[in-house]
Length: 117
Length: 114
Image 1 (cartoon, rainbow over the protein chains, first blue to last red):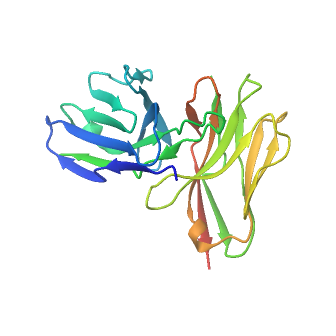
Image 2 (cartoon, rainbow over the protein chains, first blue to last red; image 1 turned 180 degrees about the horizontal axis):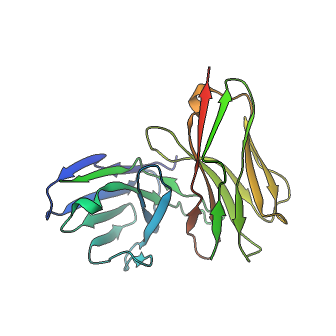
């Protein structure tokens, strides 16, 4: 159980276009999902916490107008990179937490590699 | 703010041997959770093991075990009988229940050789 699906796994886009990444919890409902960014050979940096039915909470230094997050249902959160530029090229990973708060475990999607030309 | 430090950027071990990955953290909290995640070349993050700070007993999961030293704020991962499939980046992570955020260390790249 506790499977998180992320789509697409790899996307190439032109500079100035927008890209949407989906994160789905397949076998549980997730009131909270998380979006991370990982640069090559580096650790995961939390970008934002996505809450179902409310606005996302962004980490300091993350542009909320650049990285739009929508958590419209208990199984789906989306990250839209607006007006993408080459510096936005990175590996984006989502995670979701099942309702069993006592375990405090996050399960991760397989990630999305974004390449902006 | 909580910080997590992994002082070993890379480690190597031969198949069937034992290896220990180090992790230290800094926090003023008394109740928290610690995790080890594995990221193989596929880049899928996989939970290896989890420790609750209020439990003195060290967590174990098959070949994986931890040495949790709360006073020293240390949380090392021991991998016994290493297998080729253990080759991956290993991230130590910290979470406080109230914030639900994971704070990751910089990772240790483990290479298991035949």
